[in-house]
Image (cartoon, rainbow, N blue to C red; front, top):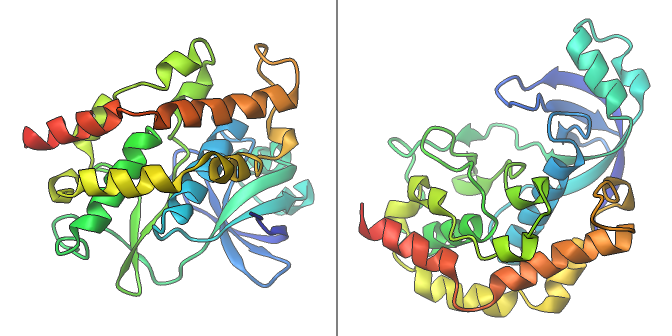
Length: 262
């Protein structure tokens, strides 16, 4: 498993609807990307959550824009008139993360856009993914779903895996039932959670999750006092994911119970 690394060549425009002030940038591969800055609010942990959840989604066959590592030179901020953006670029020098920009895509609106109403497998897959990844940010208020070429695409997973903002008792917290799933925008359509759970649980084997965790750059790890080395820190992520996959899945039961209450 491999992610490409590109060099940012031009800062195009900020996306101010995002709390962490992501931006559209151009890169040396002639691609255009939505860049998530390491120097923003939650730092590297938001990028780790984005990386893990995004690549787990891709492994499970759910549409995600390509993720790439982006090398950012602080010189890109010299011509930016906004001092906040200047500071963000300077504090994010080095390796960051970006999603491929989907030109012409529109936000999914549960009242107007219905590409999943006849596809309960897709809705169930996304609900399962977000319950497993403890992603609080897929509500009707903020769906973080795009429609592009008449297909549904997932974006913005920086709020997932919130356990890693405090590593105390992280293995115990891997059994979190994830009560926020009751607010998931696709929960009413997720009628095949049992079937999805069986398939996805078999897919996310140790080898697969290990390859995904190994994608985390060393420079994003090592800032947690509980772990003496980067290797220990990385191993803790894998241990959390494997523990969360152990049956029975409390997060699945929570989603089913929440759906029954709708």
